[in-house]
Length: 234
Ligand SMILES: [Mg+2]
Image (cartoon, rainbow, N blue to C red):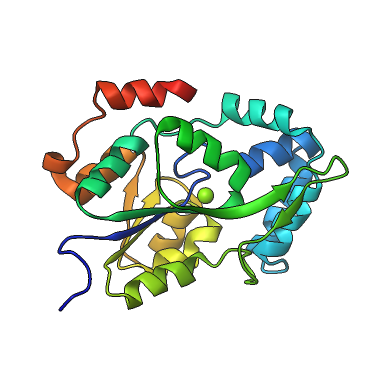
């Protein structure tokens, strides 16, 4: 017998740039060190001379700002998709599991999602707010610092249909490992899939993902209660 409930999916969702409109880490590094250092490190990742893990370490070390200042900046500039909560509610109603898988900073993610009323597992790197340069504690020993693809493969092995929703380089391998994938429109993951002829559905908001995945019956537009909860931090 199939171990998963019929129709139940294991859904993995990236945070930065996927649930939010911009990448939190990008925002913090550019605000601290300017565009040059960020662009140089991103180029190193793109040309394969630096692992994502090492790149994240280098980028974190460029941030010296006090955590309160960082939280305020992120709150002001990085907006959470208001339809994400309704998406999570629809997924749960369908018996599916949602896990947020991030290469970003757990301390910057958890409080915001919890305040919105989103209660799902969140797996991300830990940060020490060292005034001499932030330091990361990675989720695992992989070259990415967080092997998102391993989580997708484990769910697949457990007999669950897998879905991956992401936008960037840290999502490439995990998205390819999933049975179905959604890529944020105009971002690196969408290009990566298109260039390789890998099927992916492009999206702009979780409203679109929810409708595509659960249909209009389970996925209703965010109701008054959802909007009230979403407005708490917007
Ligand atoms: Mg991302």
